[in-house]
Length: 265
Length: 312
Image: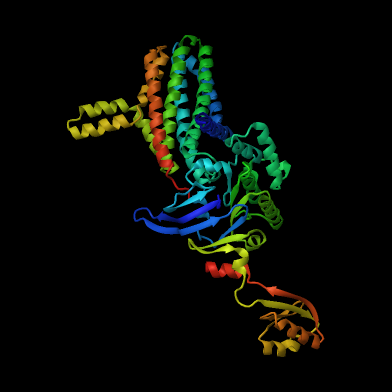
């Protein structure tokens, strides 16, 4: 009995996630891939001529940073609308009269966008791979795919931040807050150094707290190392993946706590 | 289970304003019971609290105080939603889906397998009168009336025991209203309870056994429609005649306190009791008039509505 209700619980999350993915596809979000491919093709052809011998590193740097930026754009702007658009358009009314809890809806929508980002990131990763093979950088593919995986993890965190803000704020403000977090998160380690350098205990505590609350996005910055063909050890990959899962779980719990108490006027 | 819906002392305050929050009471101590197997009309003017009540029942709003149960289970119990249906007011759905995909999506949420979903989608879309050529059009291309029909179809996907319809006739043309009215009557025949909010009174008269009338968030009246409409005073009758002038009947009208109206088809004489009918007919025949009809005059639902809701 217990098992069947668990199965139902997950089935409904899966059905909602699948529909959120379908929504992203029909809203032509994956069209950004076309721009990405054009950018990369252009780079592979022209940059190689300009910087003789540097083309492999240039392709990797440009490709990975573009994957992050395109993905961040989707995570922020689609992420803040995931739930708020449904409330505004009143599509949630019919959903919540069905046997669907608010947490199932929230997690389903989150997973749907994560799946979209996974497909987006993977296709872009394949684009970078092809460009690398074209310029003869096939020996760095393993590093590149580790970096792509890290970019995907970062985008998952960013989506969770966006959905959390949008559970209590307007889409425009949520997008702005999420963008701030994206920027601050990258300077997370500087924040800790800054806290350590400060004299007063109070200021130390404040900046120390911010450091621990903010997502540490600099963890995912493996792009430069990837350009040199370096590989992280398995323990570091596991630790970073674990951190990501815990961080997302905490954010979604907060979002769910707020969202479950909302009135849909 | 005696009552399919039990609402006990339900209140809802909305907070308005940003800094200085003001409370506006949308629903005020509503208590209501609905018996299974009937069409229950939930009436009231704009802003009376009908939609607020239904949204609380559906778990979209949380009550400020009070409790409610559907099918004997608390409204906070989402598993109860397996057995209910809901069509929101002016329904709106994912506009990137087609009607068929939407019904399939909701069917999947209820765990129906793909063959059953396909069958059920065709069955329901036919039932609500959507032409087959429109089933695979994206909902963004749908008119208001078509969306209303899709809304009704999706509310029935799980074969619910009770269905909540918030203004189900809005956006429909007269033919559409008649079709949906027939569909609602059919639901009752198949044993589904219908809880329907509306302010289209002719639909209430045609469909509802029992009604509740809300006024400014409070229950103004509830009961069998017949009982609410029955005039406790003496029953009046309307006598329609032709072939004579109003002047010929004026002496009779003056002596018996009857009212006289001129109509395009002749004269209408309204007497205050059954015993006066004979005398009136004598007066009509005496002047060479021809009797067209005699009918009891009930209190109209419109009069009742205006009285109870205080809206003119």
